[in-house]
Amino acid sequence: MKEIAICVGSSCHLQGSEKIVNIFKKLINDYQLEAKIILKGSFCQGNCTESVNISIAGKQISGVTPDNAKEIFNEYLTEGDI
Ligand code: FES
Image (cartoon, rainbow, N blue to C red; front, side):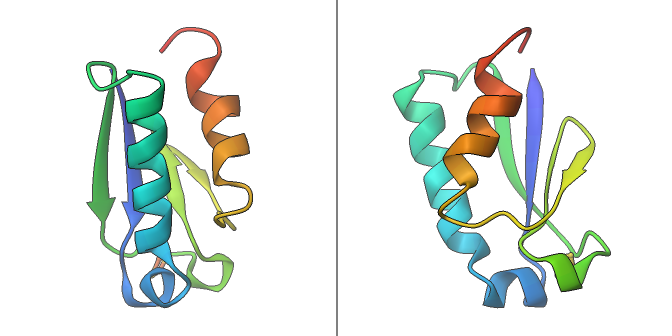
């Protein structure tokens, strides 16, 4: 089971973290990974200038946008051992 934490702090919220939440929700559903991935919101991850920040299994990833969210998801969550 892997955990994705998407920052919903004020800076990331203003940069569109809600859109990222929705994109990740859809990808989890599309790939039928509901039993393998937990998606949650988090408070500020301490890197506000690089919004939107997320962490996947504890690894912080910055600069997530609607344009690169799928690529990041595929890189970290659909290959290998999840
Ligand atoms: S508000 Fe997201 S890292 Fe600070």
